[in-house]
Structures are given as C-alpha cells and as structure tokens.
Length: 54
Image (cartoon, rainbow, N blue to C red):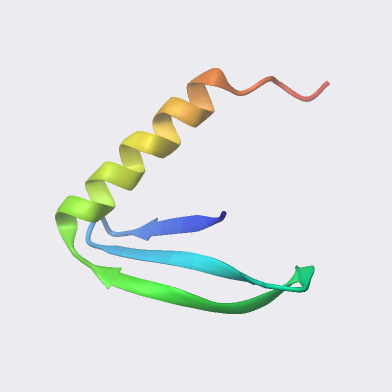
C-alpha cells in the first residue's frame, strides 16, 4: 500500500487495481490531521527499519 501525507492534514491512500498490481484503481483522500499524524508515525517507523540500498 502506498500513501502520502500532505501538509500534515491530508492523506492520500492508493488503492491498487484488483487484478493488476501495476495499475491504480483509485485513491482515498482523508482530510483529518489525526489520521495524517498516525500515518506519518507509521512512515517514520518503516523508514527507521528500512534496509539501505547499496
């Protein structure tokens, strides 16, 4: 799943096409600072645990 947080208030969550991973079916826009903050925290955790590409 891919998501983007803009300005700490809006979140866009990509919805993949059910039968083709390389296509986007659509996205959900959430305008809620609490949700944006939670997803920012998720990103920070994932980034911390990420393996650098060499």
